[in-house]
Structure formats: structure tokens, C-alpha cells
Amino acid sequence: MSVNIAIIYYSSTGTIHALAQAAAEGAQKAGADVRLRKVAETAPPEAVGARPEWAGHLRDTADVAEACHDDLEWADAVLFGTPTRFGNPSSQLRAFIDTTGPLWFHGKLADKVYSAFTASNTAHGGQESTLLALANTFYHWGGVIVPPGYTDPVQFKSGNPYGTSCTAADGLPGEVALEAARYQARRVVDIAARLRSDRVA
Ligand SMILES: Cc1cc2nc3c(=O)[nH]c(=O)nc-3n(C[C@H](O)[C@H](O)[C@H](O)COP(=O)(O)O)c2cc1C
Image (cartoon, rainbow, N blue to C red):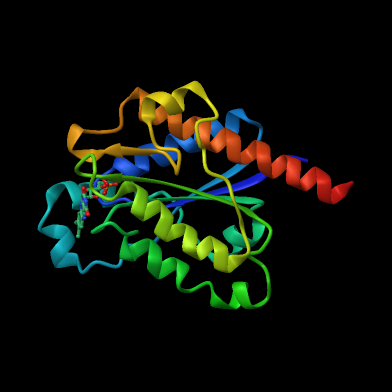
């Protein structure tokens, strides 16, 4: 049986969406069943409308399904993507996470593999703090946190052992960041498969 992986992300202007698509590719190539899901936009329409690139990305991704609790229940592994917001995950992703109390209460988020990726505008703009802040939630859920570390040559080029990240001011993610996202997803699928076979055995 293949591993179920949910890739759940928020993106205003397409950077995280591009990393999420690369992660989905990596997971598919690793043989997983993939659900690529965005979380709901919670910003007021006036704020979105004031930035054409934000409104445009929202329109361009209208056909991406929105994440729901079933995606979390279904998944053996969840890979979250979020832009850095003042060194933290975006409020849109947090808003989704903050609806998961009932799943958590019934133990339905435990024992899954969790991992995350991010972007910021500047090179030292809080990428690691954002990933570590998300990991606080994974601890509460009783998750198995799987970071990429330096377990593949691409990690020595992308340089973030906590999770794939890139600098959005440089434009859409380049090949190194995309490859790091594909690799991170592959690793998550691989570890989730090993955990599942241990449970079945
Ligand atoms: C409210 C807000 C806070 C932000 N905080 C940071 C930050 O702390 N550090 C940084 O380098 N970039 C920051 N940024 C820039 C975003 O991280 C960047 O635009 C984002 O990673 C691009 O991803 P996206 O194209 O998927 O939306 C911030 C942007 C906004 C709107």
C-alpha cells in the first residue's frame, strides 16, 4: 500500500505554491498518493485587491482544493508550507491549524510524519524560526518530525536542515530550492513508509 501524503500550504504570491508543487512531484515520484491542498484565504478582499500579484495568485489557484480535516485524518504524512510572517507561520495556515482541536483531542493527529517548508523575503528573514514555530504544533500533536537535515547533496546547496526554504525577493524558487522540496517530500514518504511497515509487522 502506498503512503498517503497531504501537502497543505498557504501562499499569497506564488512562492510557497511553487515549492508545494515541487514537493507534490517528489512525493508522487516516490510512489505516494498525494493531496495538494491550500488553506483558505482569510485576509479581507480590500487587502488582497490592493496587491495585484496577490489577487492574481488567488485567481490562478482557484481550482486547488482547500484543506479540510479529512486530509489530515487520511494522511500518513503531512508536509506544511507557509511564508514567513515576522519570523512566524502565516495567520492563514495557523487559522487552519487552530481548527484541529477535535482531531487532536481524539488522538487522530498523533503518530504521523510532519515536516515543513517556507520562504521569506530576505535571506535571514526568519525561515528557521518559522519552521521551528510550526514544529511546536507537531510536538503537541504527538507527531514524528522529519527534517531534511543534510541527508542529501542538495541540502548542502539549499542550506536549511530544518526544511526547504528560499528567498522570495530573488523571484520564484530556483532549481536548488525546487529540488530540495522534491527531496524533502521523498524523504518524508520514505520515513512514513518505514513507520507504517513497522506498525503492520
Ligand atoms: C505581514 C508580512 C510579514 C512578513 N514577514 C517577513 C519576515 O519576517 N521576514 C522576511 O524576510 N520576509 C517577510 N515577509 C515576506 C514574505 O515572507 C514573502 O513575501 C513570502 O515568503 C512570499 O511567499 P508567497 O509568494 O508564497 O506568498 C513578510 C510579508 C508579510 C506580508
